Image (cartoon, rainbow, N blue to C red; front, side):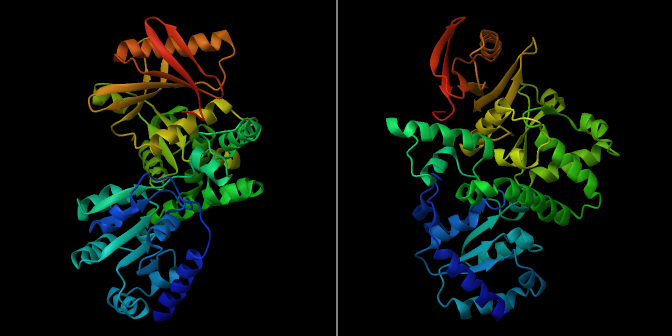
Length: 414
């Protein structure tokens, strides 16, 4: 055990020696670390959770355990581990537990550490940590920091451009970067070398399916699970229902489809957006729209003959809204009017609708503009909302129609 922990210390120190981009999390690191509550950093694999935790603790005396390590899991003995941590990291103030959800009954162990007064920073790639496992044992004992792939702003930071202060001579480069981001996403490993994007993300997608879904849930029918994942990534922004998917993909039961859909959401791979309705029963029955955590997965895995830039932009806007703290349980929805016209995003605050967002890559065609504007206005009248936005690729203006003022903004400003 001591050898494992010493090797992990070398791994920790090597990671700390690397240069990193400081992420724009909006969190006060000192405030977080001074809290006795557990600091929980969640998000999909390989988005920089471990890096963020290391940067938070860089100048502190902290112990480190990485649970993406088979040797540690196979020889696990919590009493021995605690003795070895005291030996390898004398006087440590914090413990960083990386990908702790891989440890059986991890929540009970973390709870006991918390009761012992240990100051904990933990990372995990599974949304279920926040639902059943965290909620039952650790309610009220943790603060959450959610990490996602680079935002457009962070992507520009990496490329040493300020998205909000572009000089005239930088605008051509900026336009190329925006198109690149829309098509290839913002996974940290891929922004370093775009040549690797498709191969890297294809492998990562398969790894998430295998490690975070198949192994975690002991899925035997991996063929159906993979078929569903491939169907979802090829149909982002489309309405789906478990009943229709069961028929379309020839699955044995609707329950299996629902179960697999939930499994694919747990590792932050896919999100399902409900249709807004004041009646909860009707909202639960309606089809949900599917989104993927990063556009790069579409480029890497989707069955598509050509890029659907409209869907890529809509998916990117969705992830940006998730990044801002909206969630698909309470504050973020799509809407269909009485005349079946769709509004892409309904943003709710408390009991009222605060904003309606429509996404359209290009509105040069008058028919396209009319369709988008009419849908937004009809939704605005029915939902009693006056804050209306259309996100486009590069169009910027104000449209006044039907007593409403609509802001048209390019996605980099949104």
